[in-house]
Length: 490
Image: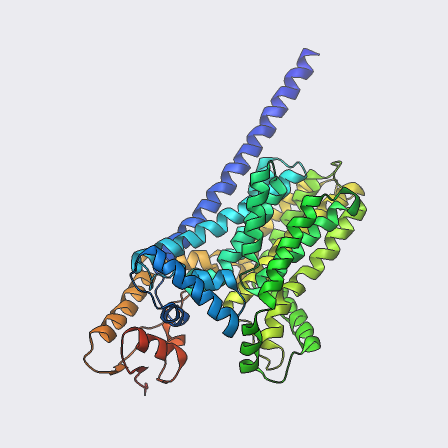
């Protein structure tokens, strides 16, 4: 008996060591990812809509109360004339480095944007795992896999290096994740009230984020089942939907839509475009990144946690159905507003939200698949499969250049940051702005723009040879010039 007890204790210690090792490894990799993006985002610069929004707010370097009032006024004006994103339009003024403290504020906002996104993602995954009783090493590992899938294989220049993109997309997305995490946590009334406030604010971001947020909350309620729902659940969902409806109902949305396409709304075309966008994003993940390996790892995770009381086949089917619809629901507002009638593609900032949703749903589906395989008795030798998968991870980069670690955005960015590529580009752009400011000419001609840096935001989309282009006019107005234009390059 004593011998068996010792064997059990030794096995328990060995298992605990493995769990702790996986936990430490996962958080170390998350810190590495975070370090690279924090360091890179520090070199974000003012461009494009940053200037036009700042001019619209019209308060520069004043006290915080004047800026607060001006930001609310700008939000109201934008709601009536341009778009209904009440949170984003308020933040465009209130957090604007141009309206506020300049470059130092840009550093704080953009670094804070990266940190907020990473923490919100980890917290949401942690609360979902906690909700079904999973250990902390599983939470940490799934968090690492999610962030790796989202951040490592494509440069999200309009999210992490462009102020206007951050406050309209990634910050509302992070707020939505925090709201849902606190809702799942809900230990007391103050936590619940804070979650309700956050979900209302999140619905005031991009409609892409608002739609995804409402649908995810609906999924949570659907999974809980009608008999298990409480008054607080309906109120939380109602607040999110109310915020989204306020966003949708803005007169500015329809005024802007008429500028883009005055032939009306095309619901069928928008749906088809949304499905096509999801297919393109899934194909990219499967063929241009090693996401299939990550999905298989998630299947293994599901198999290792299978057998719990929380799992029911009907529950799994509900989650699978909602996960299948979520990416299309996410893309639909973008397609309806901008892309369905003229065939335009998704901007980088919109694609970021789409890929984020696909990655999160694919991880959930993969884990559920692993649990289901455990329930029906397949994959009994999954530990051997883990070893084969580990070997496959080493061999795949030799078989497909897209899977090489040197081709990941993180690897490329680390090399670029190490040689100060982003910093040099930032400094050259700021030199151009100083040149415009100091010029004695009212019609300023910029001789040349710095050469684009891979994986970083390119100023050439914001300053063009056309002085009537909105971004050129916004820069000219801010610096008190008649016009600003790039000299045509021969």
